Image (cartoon, rainbow, N blue to C red):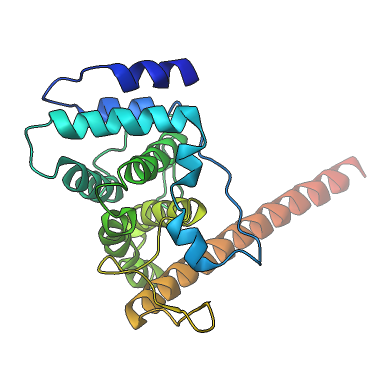
Length: 245
């Protein structure tokens, strides 16, 4: 895959780019595993947020390829436009192509394997385009659109749970890559005198509250399902014992 990324970085792309092809290519590359030590400051992290790209030849090759796609495209602001549009389309389920074996009868907010791969490749694309656009600004509108449906799901309207689940995937992956830093209109504020993060905007706190409530509901649902399964297994065992006796 490293050689393939190098080849892509030297290719002359066509003026019309199929975003599905871009996502399929990015799916071939695993996400980097990033960690931040307690001594590493938030300011240092934000200033070097693309260091994982520059230090890895594969990611760097993909970034150069994405830059070539931007330069060749006839669409103005191709990168920011495509990134935000694709992220929103993903949350709405327009990019989902799960096979029949991956589909579940009841919508419970779980993502299929194909959705996991697609969501992660979208965040990867936003990261590779960060020299010309803010990944945080590209991801937050889609995340906000999905998580804002969480209250309806908590009130037992599970028809929207798949959208919430996909928005959570974008949020999770964006946080893992240290890309999500604000509400889409600016970065979170750091107090330079103490080098500490200031409290997030109320809108962000509300969205995170929605996410927490949804996750708690999912956990309760999984636990109740497990309890019912244990009760069923217990009743079967008891019946078997009565028959054999």
